Image (cartoon, rainbow, N blue to C red):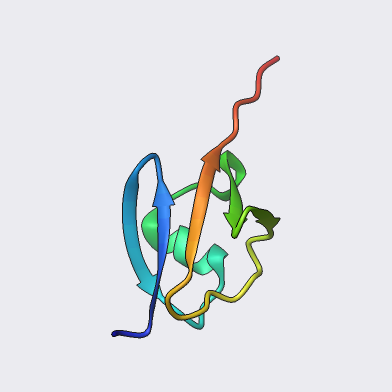
Length: 66
């Protein structure tokens, strides 16, 4: 198994390098951090969390309006 974590957004899975931050992975995937919240094991986490090998981070889109 490679040194990767999985990011899931709208049923699309992305394999990203473990050991980097969620923010770095989002930037690489060209996903705006302001448009999502990150969930790991049912708990909210911030974008500065380090990705661990084999873990799954689910991204939930946020909607704002005026």
